[in-house]
Image (tube, rainbow, N blue to C red; front, side):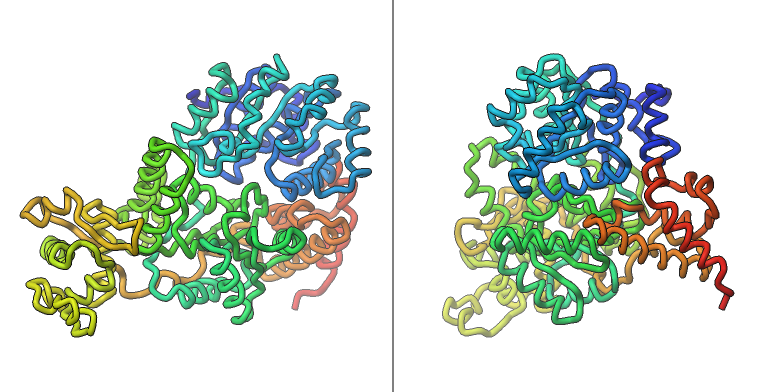
Length: 615
């Protein structure tokens, strides 16, 4: 892995394009070194956090190279359409050929590509890797092939796609053409796999870090998920968010639940017809305050910058998948929340999924270990961000922006509790689930306990001093710490591991974290978005009016609002109040094309606001 040289010098044309086309005065950390490497003709794998500007790393080289063509391989039609729309608003000749467009539209796009009038062509791996398309492209001047969401190439990654695997032929099919691969989600094993399969060991890798410090991390035990979800969303009125559910049925239930409480919530899962999925995604991407309730079928490549939260109603598949999904929040750098509910049933279900997978034993073993890492994150007694980043081999100090930093858990000596629980499980035959074990521990007098004669066991009633929620937490933590094993082939029965047997027989003690009595999901939203911070009352009114104008212009053009201008750009307008085009040109994100196309309506609105008397 290459470190990022602090003094990396990028072609002067790249700096000019950054300002004139995209309206930015400086590169973000890591961008310069990656751009310079691509311009040098070297293939590169870049791992950058979501929202850190990966797209510019291949878009700028595409424009520096003048009349040649850059291919951009992207996994989703909606993402391709949005990125092409954004580039066109910046005055860049970009096209996409995809299945959502009419045949004549795709044919016209290809004619422009073949005529040399297009700098960037966005295309899916399925369409690119057809023999007809490959043959046609090999006759053109292709200067770069950029692969977005590159972790999809690796079977070790969180969302392997077989169609991406065919991309490993690109180095052979386009000899001498540098490949640039980008992802926000790749641990060391995944990175090595991508390097070997895509570059055959001949490229460079840049890792700029994984931390997303603007996202507040929190995990909570599932008690009453419907109430927990409603409380969380209610505390964030008007915010756009994503709620992830494990099943299609739960997705529909959660969307109806939120809609019933007055929120604009839309479902998204593979069971919906494609037209409805597309319509719901379009509403989410273009309108404010929409909550998308979805399975993991929704999300890859979602580029909406103002998603203020991601709420996991169930445990994700593994640490990489979790990192990828929470990364859809706060892409604009403003405060956001990543909140997760989980319980023993989640752990069992995820184990079942792994065992039912088609992979070999080695693959399943790796996936179980990856799930172990996520469970350890959920039960972390220290800074949650440190646990997350350490998985990606990145060290950090306590963050002060996660639940365990803001509300440190109470650690107690739970040795006696653990041995009572392990004894109850052993005495009942190591085949019952948590509910029955807890009833035995608390001395319940149920028909099931009497019928099994479990009221006569030594363990019966030994845990009556703790409530059911505490015992659920202790059993969950014993599973997470590998003292107990969940039966994933049956009904979630608990049995002792070798470590659990040693603890029961007098081995080392057990510390447990007592769940807080209050629900973290009732905590208020994080601080208001940074873009609006520091504005006067009049400035906030102008900021709101500018957002309305942006939305109107976006609707006229059929594009997401953020493609017109970011919130940061509007906040600068509201603060600095440019009075003419020369001043407007200095606003963040205003390049030559946007100066030409948008200066007049925004300057007119600002002038009107300045002329209005203060209330």
